[in-house]
Image (cartoon, rainbow, N blue to C red; front, side):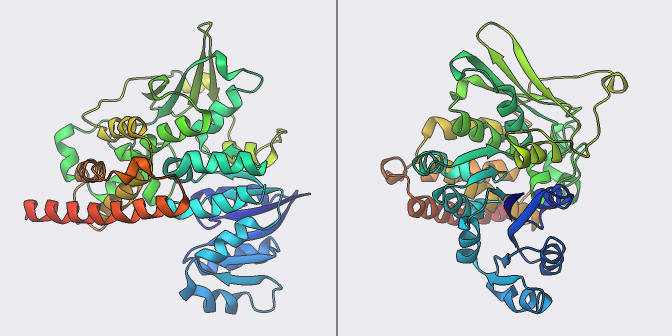
Length: 391
């Protein structure tokens, strides 16, 4: 029986993983979550977890009360989440959303664990640090994003030297068919409705802006060591082809499946074997067609910013992600508009580029977190100026 820890168990990735874990074959070492304490407690009881952790210290008493007498150990706070990630386990699944997932990712690989990584920010903010730490500790990192899992699977038995390009697909999000002028007035509720995938609010809005895909481009660069100019993005409305790998002989390998995150999660949970999964089987005849188109830079400026991040290197990934998270907060709170998010991120990157330490400092966790904090402050300043300009 495989021993597993699940970080971010109450989020969209966590719930999909819970569905698979709950079907048997796993012993749960630890679960971590946020403010949804009732759900975290019920998960811990249902799966007989050794440990349940909320990342918010103010939620400790409620979690402890809900789990009193259950035999489940309770803890709270960022330190406790990192400690949970470092507990001995066969597999640590990191489904935490945002930069908060970086420290637990590092803790897991330092402990030599196999890390199933859905937290793309770990690679965007500190890819070289995470992958170097994993190599030094003899840890394995498995991708859980659907696109990167697809690439990973297409590369089985292949040599990286034979890879010519990687193509990751994007649905285009909620606004792929909207007139460009209408995007200025788009609301958070409209942006949080995805045409194909069922995901949480933040990642669904990131899909509409293509910031999610921008993060995935950087993630592919860091995880697979693919040069930025060899990573392509295509709009694929059906979301049936998750990624393609092109080889030096002109052949391409495509990974297809229904739009269900349990594909990628299940592959990581059972790796290196495959196991039956309770997912829809793709009916190509019923689907009828597969469409692809190049993304419009004017509609999706986030993609261009991703390539600027990779060209800059250093700590610019941490800056990009922090500014994106701050801008997303501002949009959800209606302080800025949908199209303002890219402007805020670009302005923040511009101001941070003048910081000489950004590219000169060694990539350490402390330096990444410092760049993250500086970028959030500058992003908030940029948002304040946007609010003043729009009245």
